[in-house]
Amino acid sequence: MRKFLTIFAGTLVTGSVLAGGLVTNNNQSAMFTRLQNRNASTGIDAVFYNPAGLTKLGDGFYVSLNNQIVKQTKTVRNDYRFLSGTPVDYVGKVSAPVFPGVYVAYKTGKLAFSAGFNPVGGGGGAKYNEGLPSFEMNIADLVPLVSGFGINTTKYSADIFFEGTSVYFGYQANMSYEINDMVSAAIGARLVSAKNTYNGFIKNIMINPVYAGNPSGAMMSAPSFFTSIGQAGYAAATADREVDVEKTGTGITPILSLNITPSEKLNLAIKYEFKTKLDMTTKVSDNKSGGIFVDGSKAIADLPAIIMAGAEYRPMNKLMIAGTFNCYFDQNVDYDGSESTDVDMIDKNFIEYGLGAEYGISEKLRISAGWLATATGVNSNYQSDQTYSTNTNSFGAGFGYRISPKIDLNLGGHYTFYDDDTKTFNHMLGSNPIPATETYSKKTMIIAVGLDFCFGKE
Image 1 (cartoon, rainbow, N blue to C red):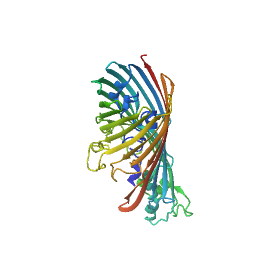
Image 2: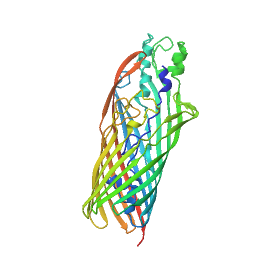
Image 3: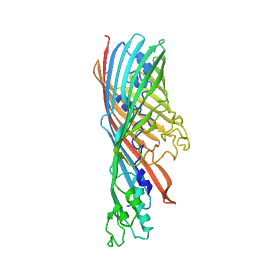
Image 4: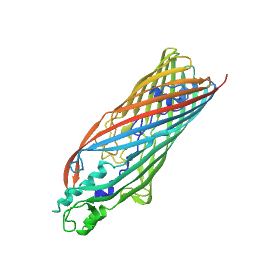
């Protein structure tokens, strides 16, 4: 019964909600949404994707304002035999109506200076109106537990709610230099400011024991029942629980970038982001910790190093073909929040790859579409109802329209298909292992808009 004290999860809303690795977002502009491949960008969103490519801009000042509206649904199906209505689907809604990307750059001669702001991790809030299996399974155990006392019990109920938010804002600055007509390089850094919040409750746990104090077998308060039979420990364990917790931390990401243009038709880029050391400090409000969070405690929440490569090829003036390859070095990160390596969660590094194309319909109108796939490297130790990762295929499309010589509009839509994954594990009912199988699924949809402003020299 001690498990009732620790059933609120600590990693439920961390991680990426969009394109990118386990904890990193890679969809950082409306242009990305409609093309899916921007690693070799020489436009204003190169502030994030390819800082060295900014030397390809004309001299002047540039600004890009982007927002994405993100909707994600997470579904966990669990067939634990004691859950009411087995199998049960637990649905979480992630919403990010504001997912900004703001970039500025100034190019003069061989130099370019730039800065950016965006959510490099997290970026939304997850709401589970009926909790998760790891919450309810422990409550469902009351039925066999009380029946084991020789008191016939067949039903349970509880009010369960959980909501969490996660956002890792990145504040980036770069300096780019054109070494010669073919090669440019850039150096930069990103300040990452992370914040996760957890708010929820488990209340009104009830069961229907048939005994002298409840001969009709009506639903009654579980704490009251346990008190009436002299089980004070169980009464305390089934009392109402609340969580109101915030975790915060900051870290620095050094960034190196190289851009190579072998010919007028081909542009190549590579960027390396170093591992971001990040510790999260817990703040518990009004002693509401659900029994698992300790005020002032720290946990590791590092972001992995990333190598990003890309190419853009123009076989003709109207057509541009783009390709992407990313590798997230997850094997060098402790995703369990500690330095312990007792539990290995990662078998291989997370990779991402894709292709996209843009075609100019006219001088003002361009259409584009792209595909981006991921291959996760996690094993079953990582997968749970609280956090899981599966392979994906994303498709995006949209258009760009030149409103004026100095203003570009980008509109795009994006949908991600996630592979389902299943995990069979033993849930401990006292000392007895009871098998259960969970199925994890997810879907994501994005709509993005961006305005790019050019104040270049005439």
